Amino acid sequence: MSSREKEYGFETQALHGGYNPKEDNRGSRAVPIYQTTSYVFDDADHAASLFALEEEGDIYTRIGNPTNEALEKRIAQLEGAEAGLVTSSGMAAINLTALTLAEGGGKIVSSKYVYGGTYHLFSETLPKYGIETTFVDPHDLDNWEEAIDEETKFLYLESPGNPTLDVVDIEAVANLAHKYDLKLVMDNTFNTPYLSKPLEFGADIVVHSTTKYIGGHGSSIGGVIVGPTDFLLKARTEGYRDTGPAMSPFNAWLFIQGLETLALRMEKHSKNALKVAKWLEDHPQVDWVRYPGLKSHPQHQLAKKQQRYFGGMLCFGIKGGFKAGKQLINNVKLCSLLANVGDTRTLIIHPASTTHEQLSKEEQEAAGITDNLIRLSIGIENVEDIIADLEQAFK
Ligand SMILES: *Cc1c(COP(=O)(O)O)cnc(C)c1O
Image (cartoon, rainbow, N blue to C red; front, top):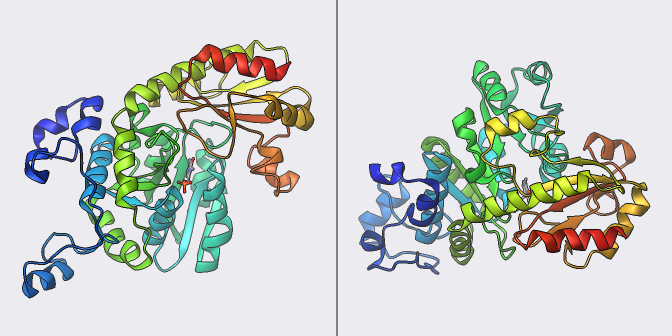
Protein backbone atom coordinates (compact mmCIF):
# COMPACT_ATOMS: atom_id res chain seq x y z
CA MET A 1 0.00 0.00 0.00
CA SER A 2 1.38 3.45 -0.85
CA SER A 3 1.60 5.94 2.00
CA ARG A 4 -0.92 8.10 0.18
CA GLU A 5 -3.51 5.31 0.12
CA LYS A 6 -3.27 5.06 3.88
CA GLU A 7 -4.27 8.71 4.23
CA TYR A 8 -7.35 8.47 2.04
CA GLY A 9 -10.74 8.65 3.70
CA PHE A 10 -12.92 5.56 4.16
CA GLU A 11 -15.09 6.08 1.06
CA THR A 12 -12.01 6.53 -1.14
CA GLN A 13 -10.26 3.46 0.24
CA ALA A 14 -13.45 1.43 -0.24
CA LEU A 15 -13.31 2.29 -3.96
CA HIS A 16 -9.58 2.23 -4.65
CA GLY A 17 -7.86 0.25 -1.90
CA GLY A 18 -5.83 -2.88 -2.55
CA TYR A 19 -5.82 -2.62 -6.32
CA ASN A 20 -3.83 -0.67 -8.90
CA PRO A 21 -5.26 -0.87 -12.46
CA LYS A 22 -1.96 -0.15 -14.21
CA GLU A 23 0.33 -2.27 -12.08
CA ASP A 24 -2.03 -5.16 -11.63
CA ASN A 25 -4.20 -5.46 -14.70
CA ARG A 26 -3.54 -3.75 -18.03
CA GLY A 27 -5.53 -0.71 -16.94
CA SER A 28 -8.75 -2.53 -16.08
CA ARG A 29 -10.58 0.02 -13.90
CA ALA A 30 -12.79 -2.57 -12.23
CA VAL A 31 -11.04 -5.38 -10.33
CA PRO A 32 -11.16 -8.32 -12.77
CA ILE A 33 -12.30 -11.81 -11.81
CA TYR A 34 -9.45 -14.29 -11.97
CA GLN A 35 -11.62 -17.32 -12.50
CA THR A 36 -8.76 -19.81 -12.45
CA THR A 37 -7.69 -22.68 -10.26
CA SER A 38 -3.93 -22.43 -10.83
CA TYR A 39 -1.05 -20.27 -12.05
CA VAL A 40 1.76 -21.11 -14.46
CA PHE A 41 5.24 -21.26 -12.87
CA ASP A 42 8.25 -19.75 -14.64
CA ASP A 43 10.25 -22.94 -14.22
CA ALA A 44 10.90 -25.78 -11.77
CA ASP A 45 12.99 -23.59 -9.42
CA HIS A 46 10.28 -20.93 -9.34
CA ALA A 47 7.69 -23.59 -8.46
CA ALA A 48 9.95 -24.98 -5.73
CA SER A 49 10.58 -21.60 -4.15
CA LEU A 50 6.83 -20.76 -4.13
CA PHE A 51 6.01 -24.03 -2.41
CA ALA A 52 8.79 -23.48 0.12
CA LEU A 53 7.32 -19.99 0.84
CA GLU A 54 10.70 -18.46 -0.06
CA GLU A 55 9.05 -16.30 -2.67
CA GLU A 56 5.57 -14.74 -2.79
CA GLY A 57 3.35 -15.68 -5.69
CA ASP A 58 0.28 -17.53 -6.86
CA ILE A 59 0.12 -21.30 -6.78
CA TYR A 60 -3.47 -22.48 -6.50
CA THR A 61 -6.75 -20.66 -5.72
CA ARG A 62 -7.35 -22.73 -2.58
CA ILE A 63 -4.34 -20.85 -1.14
CA GLY A 64 -4.70 -17.47 -2.87
CA ASN A 65 -6.16 -15.66 -5.88
CA PRO A 66 -5.60 -12.12 -7.26
CA THR A 67 -9.31 -11.13 -7.05
CA ASN A 68 -9.48 -12.45 -3.50
CA GLU A 69 -6.25 -10.59 -2.72
CA ALA A 70 -7.73 -7.26 -3.82
CA LEU A 71 -10.65 -7.83 -1.42
CA GLU A 72 -8.30 -8.94 1.38
CA LYS A 73 -6.11 -5.87 1.01
CA ARG A 74 -9.08 -3.53 0.79
CA ILE A 75 -10.83 -4.82 3.92
CA ALA A 76 -7.51 -4.91 5.83
CA GLN A 77 -6.92 -1.28 4.84
CA LEU A 78 -10.43 -0.25 5.92
CA GLU A 79 -10.00 -1.97 9.31
CA GLY A 80 -6.49 -0.55 9.77
CA ALA A 81 -5.00 -4.08 9.81
CA GLU A 82 -1.77 -5.38 8.32
CA ALA A 83 -3.27 -8.25 6.34
CA GLY A 84 -6.44 -10.14 5.45
CA LEU A 85 -7.67 -13.57 4.40
CA VAL A 86 -11.04 -14.22 2.75
CA THR A 87 -12.96 -17.42 3.45
CA SER A 88 -15.96 -19.31 2.09
CA SER A 89 -18.23 -18.06 4.91
CA GLY A 90 -18.21 -16.08 8.12
CA MET A 91 -18.28 -19.34 10.10
CA ALA A 92 -15.21 -20.55 8.18
CA ALA A 93 -13.40 -17.34 9.21
CA ILE A 94 -14.34 -17.83 12.88
CA ASN A 95 -13.47 -21.55 12.85
CA LEU A 96 -10.10 -21.00 11.15
CA THR A 97 -9.24 -18.23 13.61
CA ALA A 98 -10.10 -20.49 16.55
CA LEU A 99 -8.19 -23.48 15.20
CA THR A 100 -5.13 -21.34 14.49
CA LEU A 101 -5.07 -19.62 17.88
CA ALA A 102 -6.06 -22.65 19.95
CA GLU A 103 -3.68 -25.07 18.25
CA GLY A 104 -3.35 -28.27 20.24
CA GLY A 105 -6.49 -27.56 22.26
CA GLY A 106 -7.19 -25.06 24.99
CA LYS A 107 -9.83 -22.65 26.11
CA ILE A 108 -11.74 -19.71 24.64
CA VAL A 109 -13.33 -17.11 26.87
CA SER A 110 -16.24 -15.63 24.92
CA SER A 111 -19.03 -13.15 25.40
CA LYS A 112 -22.32 -15.02 25.72
CA TYR A 113 -24.01 -12.59 23.31
CA VAL A 114 -22.68 -13.96 20.04
CA TYR A 115 -24.14 -15.13 16.74
CA GLY A 116 -26.03 -18.44 17.08
CA GLY A 117 -23.66 -20.29 14.74
CA THR A 118 -20.66 -19.10 16.73
CA TYR A 119 -22.33 -20.16 19.98
CA HIS A 120 -22.89 -23.64 18.57
CA LEU A 121 -19.35 -23.91 17.16
CA PHE A 122 -17.86 -22.94 20.53
CA SER A 123 -20.25 -24.93 22.73
CA GLU A 124 -20.79 -28.12 20.68
CA THR A 125 -18.30 -28.63 17.88
CA LEU A 126 -14.92 -27.32 19.06
CA PRO A 127 -15.07 -29.26 22.38
CA LYS A 128 -14.92 -32.45 20.25
CA TYR A 129 -11.48 -31.24 19.15
CA GLY A 130 -10.21 -30.31 22.59
CA ILE A 131 -11.20 -26.63 22.55
CA GLU A 132 -13.58 -25.64 25.35
CA THR A 133 -15.35 -22.30 25.78
CA THR A 134 -16.45 -20.42 28.88
CA PHE A 135 -19.22 -17.93 28.09
CA VAL A 136 -19.30 -14.76 30.16
CA ASP A 137 -21.44 -11.69 30.67
CA PRO A 138 -19.46 -9.30 28.43
CA HIS A 139 -20.16 -6.25 30.62
CA ASP A 140 -18.63 -7.80 33.73
CA LEU A 141 -14.83 -7.53 33.56
CA ASP A 142 -14.42 -9.66 36.70
CA ASN A 143 -16.37 -12.37 34.93
CA TRP A 144 -13.91 -12.29 32.02
CA GLU A 145 -10.93 -12.27 34.35
CA GLU A 146 -12.19 -15.15 36.52
CA ALA A 147 -12.67 -17.29 33.42
CA ILE A 148 -9.08 -16.80 32.21
CA ASP A 149 -6.67 -19.58 33.19
CA GLU A 150 -3.45 -21.28 32.01
CA GLU A 151 -5.34 -23.04 29.22
CA THR A 152 -6.88 -19.88 27.75
CA LYS A 153 -5.85 -19.18 24.15
CA PHE A 154 -7.90 -16.08 23.26
CA LEU A 155 -10.85 -13.86 24.19
CA TYR A 156 -13.80 -13.43 21.82
CA LEU A 157 -16.57 -10.88 21.52
CA GLU A 158 -19.18 -9.38 19.27
CA SER A 159 -20.50 -5.81 19.50
CA PRO A 160 -23.30 -5.04 19.06
CA GLY A 161 -24.00 -8.62 20.09
CA ASN A 162 -26.57 -10.89 18.54
CA PRO A 163 -29.55 -10.69 19.01
CA THR A 164 -29.78 -8.39 22.04
CA LEU A 165 -27.57 -5.67 20.52
CA ASP A 166 -25.49 -5.30 23.66
CA VAL A 167 -22.62 -2.89 23.04
CA VAL A 168 -19.42 -4.12 24.69
CA ASP A 169 -16.49 -1.98 25.89
CA ILE A 170 -13.84 -3.23 23.45
CA GLU A 171 -10.99 -1.27 25.02
CA ALA A 172 -11.63 -2.69 28.49
CA VAL A 173 -11.73 -6.30 27.25
CA ALA A 174 -8.65 -5.73 25.04
CA ASN A 175 -6.70 -4.36 28.00
CA LEU A 176 -7.60 -7.41 30.02
CA ALA A 177 -6.57 -9.75 27.18
CA HIS A 178 -3.20 -8.01 26.89
CA LYS A 179 -2.65 -8.17 30.65
CA TYR A 180 -2.60 -11.96 30.25
CA ASP A 181 -0.71 -11.84 26.95
CA LEU A 182 -3.78 -13.06 25.05
CA LYS A 183 -5.32 -11.89 21.80
CA LEU A 184 -8.78 -10.37 21.56
CA VAL A 185 -10.74 -11.59 18.54
CA MET A 186 -13.77 -9.57 17.58
CA ASP A 187 -16.66 -10.20 15.19
CA ASN A 188 -17.34 -6.81 13.55
CA THR A 189 -20.08 -7.99 11.18
CA PHE A 190 -22.87 -5.78 12.54
CA ASN A 191 -20.85 -2.56 12.56
CA THR A 192 -18.55 -3.02 9.56
CA PRO A 193 -15.33 -0.93 9.58
CA TYR A 194 -17.32 2.10 8.48
CA LEU A 195 -19.12 2.33 11.82
CA SER A 196 -16.30 1.11 14.04
CA LYS A 197 -12.73 -0.19 13.77
CA PRO A 198 -12.09 -2.59 16.68
CA LEU A 199 -8.31 -2.52 16.14
CA GLU A 200 -8.36 1.16 17.13
CA PHE A 201 -9.79 0.10 20.49
CA GLY A 202 -7.16 -2.59 21.01
CA ALA A 203 -8.67 -5.73 19.42
CA ASP A 204 -6.01 -7.86 17.70
CA ILE A 205 -7.93 -9.86 15.12
CA VAL A 206 -11.24 -9.00 13.44
CA VAL A 207 -13.58 -11.41 11.66
CA HIS A 208 -16.58 -10.67 9.45
CA SER A 209 -19.35 -12.48 7.74
CA THR A 210 -19.06 -10.60 4.42
CA THR A 211 -22.42 -12.26 3.64
CA LYS A 212 -24.03 -9.37 5.53
CA TYR A 213 -23.34 -5.64 5.10
CA ILE A 214 -20.03 -5.91 3.22
CA GLY A 215 -21.74 -7.75 0.37
CA GLY A 216 -25.01 -6.00 1.11
CA HIS A 217 -26.99 -7.57 -1.68
CA GLY A 218 -27.81 -10.90 -0.09
CA SER A 219 -26.31 -12.76 -3.06
CA SER A 220 -23.24 -14.56 -1.67
CA ILE A 221 -21.85 -16.25 1.44
CA GLY A 222 -18.35 -15.26 2.54
CA GLY A 223 -16.07 -14.24 5.38
CA VAL A 224 -12.81 -12.50 6.14
CA ILE A 225 -10.17 -12.40 8.87
CA VAL A 226 -7.92 -9.34 9.29
CA GLY A 227 -5.04 -8.86 11.69
CA PRO A 228 -1.26 -9.19 12.00
CA THR A 229 0.70 -10.50 8.98
CA ASP A 230 2.39 -13.35 10.91
CA PHE A 231 -0.95 -14.67 12.21
CA LEU A 232 -2.57 -14.57 8.77
CA LEU A 233 0.43 -16.19 7.09
CA LYS A 234 0.18 -19.05 9.56
CA ALA A 235 -3.59 -19.34 9.06
CA ARG A 236 -3.22 -19.31 5.26
CA THR A 237 -0.36 -21.77 4.97
CA GLU A 238 -1.67 -24.24 7.57
CA GLY A 239 -5.40 -24.45 8.34
CA TYR A 240 -6.60 -22.65 5.21
CA ARG A 241 -4.41 -24.59 2.83
CA ASP A 242 -5.12 -27.94 4.47
CA THR A 243 -8.84 -27.73 5.18
CA GLY A 244 -9.99 -25.76 2.10
CA PRO A 245 -12.32 -22.91 3.16
CA ALA A 246 -11.30 -20.70 0.20
CA MET A 247 -13.62 -18.03 -1.23
CA SER A 248 -14.72 -18.39 -4.84
CA PRO A 249 -13.15 -15.57 -6.94
CA PHE A 250 -16.57 -14.79 -8.37
CA ASN A 251 -17.93 -14.22 -4.87
CA ALA A 252 -14.87 -12.09 -4.02
CA TRP A 253 -15.72 -9.94 -7.02
CA LEU A 254 -19.34 -9.58 -5.86
CA PHE A 255 -18.13 -8.57 -2.39
CA ILE A 256 -15.87 -5.93 -3.96
CA GLN A 257 -18.93 -4.47 -5.75
CA GLY A 258 -20.74 -4.34 -2.41
CA LEU A 259 -17.82 -2.92 -0.46
CA GLU A 260 -17.52 0.04 -2.84
CA THR A 261 -20.84 1.50 -1.61
CA LEU A 262 -20.57 0.36 2.03
CA ALA A 263 -20.31 3.86 3.52
CA LEU A 264 -23.41 5.11 1.70
CA ARG A 265 -25.41 2.07 2.67
CA MET A 266 -24.37 2.01 6.34
CA GLU A 267 -25.35 5.64 6.72
CA LYS A 268 -28.78 4.96 5.20
CA HIS A 269 -29.28 1.71 7.18
CA SER A 270 -28.47 3.63 10.37
CA LYS A 271 -30.73 6.60 9.61
CA ASN A 272 -33.64 4.32 8.70
CA ALA A 273 -33.13 2.12 11.76
CA LEU A 274 -33.07 5.10 14.12
CA LYS A 275 -36.37 6.35 12.66
CA VAL A 276 -38.02 2.93 12.94
CA ALA A 277 -36.66 2.47 16.49
CA LYS A 278 -38.11 5.82 17.61
CA TRP A 279 -41.42 5.02 15.95
CA LEU A 280 -41.57 1.63 17.65
CA GLU A 281 -40.75 3.16 21.04
CA ASP A 282 -43.95 5.22 20.81
CA HIS A 283 -46.08 2.35 19.53
CA PRO A 284 -48.82 1.13 21.93
CA GLN A 285 -48.33 -2.55 20.92
CA VAL A 286 -44.61 -2.45 21.70
CA ASP A 287 -43.23 -3.35 25.11
CA TRP A 288 -39.59 -2.34 24.68
CA VAL A 289 -37.09 -1.47 21.92
CA ARG A 290 -33.37 -2.22 21.83
CA TYR A 291 -31.32 -0.04 19.47
CA PRO A 292 -27.86 1.36 20.32
CA GLY A 293 -28.94 4.76 18.94
CA LEU A 294 -31.77 5.19 21.46
CA LYS A 295 -31.12 7.00 24.74
CA SER A 296 -32.93 4.13 26.44
CA HIS A 297 -30.26 1.63 25.31
CA PRO A 298 -28.16 0.65 28.35
CA GLN A 299 -24.85 1.26 26.51
CA HIS A 300 -25.92 4.24 24.43
CA GLN A 301 -22.96 6.38 25.58
CA LEU A 302 -20.49 3.61 24.83
CA ALA A 303 -22.05 3.10 21.40
CA LYS A 304 -21.56 6.82 20.75
CA LYS A 305 -17.89 6.51 21.65
CA GLN A 306 -17.21 3.34 19.65
CA GLN A 307 -19.40 3.83 16.58
CA ARG A 308 -19.82 6.46 13.86
CA TYR A 309 -23.53 5.59 13.50
CA PHE A 310 -25.65 2.97 15.25
CA GLY A 311 -26.20 0.45 12.45
CA GLY A 312 -29.20 -1.26 10.89
CA MET A 313 -30.02 -3.92 13.49
CA LEU A 314 -32.71 -3.50 16.10
CA CYS A 315 -34.99 -5.69 18.15
CA PHE A 316 -38.16 -5.11 20.10
CA GLY A 317 -40.61 -6.90 22.34
CA ILE A 318 -44.18 -7.11 21.11
CA LYS A 319 -47.06 -7.04 23.59
CA GLY A 320 -48.93 -10.37 23.56
CA GLY A 321 -45.83 -12.59 23.60
CA PHE A 322 -45.16 -15.61 21.37
CA LYS A 323 -48.55 -15.58 19.60
CA ALA A 324 -48.45 -11.87 18.81
CA GLY A 325 -44.87 -12.24 17.54
CA LYS A 326 -45.84 -14.99 15.15
CA GLN A 327 -48.89 -13.05 14.00
CA LEU A 328 -46.87 -9.94 13.27
CA ILE A 329 -44.34 -11.71 11.09
CA ASN A 330 -47.14 -13.54 9.27
CA ASN A 331 -48.65 -10.21 8.29
CA VAL A 332 -45.71 -8.19 7.00
CA LYS A 333 -45.66 -7.66 3.24
CA LEU A 334 -42.57 -5.59 2.42
CA CYS A 335 -40.28 -6.99 5.12
CA SER A 336 -38.85 -10.38 4.17
CA LEU A 337 -39.24 -13.18 6.69
CA LEU A 338 -35.88 -14.97 6.63
CA ALA A 339 -32.77 -15.94 8.60
CA ASN A 340 -30.26 -13.37 7.41
CA VAL A 341 -29.18 -9.85 8.35
CA GLY A 342 -27.43 -6.94 6.67
CA ASP A 343 -29.28 -7.15 3.37
CA THR A 344 -30.20 -3.95 1.49
CA ARG A 345 -33.82 -5.06 2.01
CA THR A 346 -35.58 -5.04 5.38
CA LEU A 347 -35.61 -8.48 7.04
CA ILE A 348 -37.65 -9.68 9.97
CA ILE A 349 -37.61 -12.77 12.19
CA HIS A 350 -39.23 -14.05 15.38
CA PRO A 351 -36.34 -16.06 16.90
CA ALA A 352 -38.44 -17.94 19.51
CA SER A 353 -40.52 -19.66 16.79
CA THR A 354 -37.69 -20.09 14.24
CA THR A 355 -33.90 -19.78 14.68
CA HIS A 356 -33.99 -20.57 18.42
CA GLU A 357 -37.05 -22.83 18.44
CA GLN A 358 -34.98 -25.97 19.23
CA LEU A 359 -33.45 -24.46 22.35
CA SER A 360 -34.93 -25.08 25.77
CA LYS A 361 -36.50 -22.15 27.65
CA GLU A 362 -33.35 -21.88 29.80
CA GLU A 363 -31.08 -21.87 26.76
CA GLN A 364 -33.25 -19.25 25.07
CA GLU A 365 -33.11 -17.09 28.16
CA ALA A 366 -29.33 -17.46 28.41
CA ALA A 367 -29.05 -16.31 24.79
CA GLY A 368 -31.29 -13.31 25.53
CA ILE A 369 -34.23 -14.62 23.48
CA THR A 370 -37.62 -13.86 24.96
CA ASP A 371 -40.92 -15.13 23.48
CA ASN A 372 -41.90 -11.66 22.36
CA LEU A 373 -38.57 -10.66 20.75
CA ILE A 374 -38.70 -9.60 17.10
CA ARG A 375 -35.44 -8.91 15.27
CA LEU A 376 -35.37 -6.43 12.42
CA SER A 377 -32.53 -5.84 10.00
CA ILE A 378 -33.53 -2.47 8.58
CA GLY A 379 -32.87 -2.04 4.86
CA ILE A 380 -32.29 1.01 2.68
CA GLU A 381 -35.84 1.26 1.34
CA ASN A 382 -37.80 4.48 1.79
CA VAL A 383 -38.26 4.48 5.56
CA GLU A 384 -41.93 5.52 5.34
CA ASP A 385 -42.64 2.29 3.46
CA ILE A 386 -40.94 0.19 6.17
CA ILE A 387 -42.97 1.92 8.89
CA ALA A 388 -46.21 1.59 6.91
CA ASP A 389 -45.61 -2.14 6.46
CA LEU A 390 -45.05 -2.68 10.18
CA GLU A 391 -48.09 -0.54 11.00
CA GLN A 392 -50.43 -2.60 8.81
CA ALA A 393 -48.97 -5.82 10.26
CA PHE A 394 -49.58 -4.58 13.84
CA LYS A 395 -53.19 -3.86 12.88
C1 LIG B 1 -24.03 -14.36 9.78
C2 LIG B 1 -23.07 -14.13 10.85
C3 LIG B 1 -21.98 -14.99 11.05
C4 LIG B 1 -21.76 -16.23 10.21
O1 LIG B 1 -21.49 -15.91 8.88
P1 LIG B 1 -21.88 -16.84 7.63
O2 LIG B 1 -21.38 -16.04 6.47
O3 LIG B 1 -23.34 -17.05 7.64
O4 LIG B 1 -21.12 -18.13 7.82
C5 LIG B 1 -21.11 -14.69 12.06
N1 LIG B 1 -21.29 -13.62 12.86
C6 LIG B 1 -22.33 -12.78 12.70
C7 LIG B 1 -22.46 -11.61 13.60
C8 LIG B 1 -23.25 -13.00 11.70
O5 LIG B 1 -24.28 -12.15 11.55
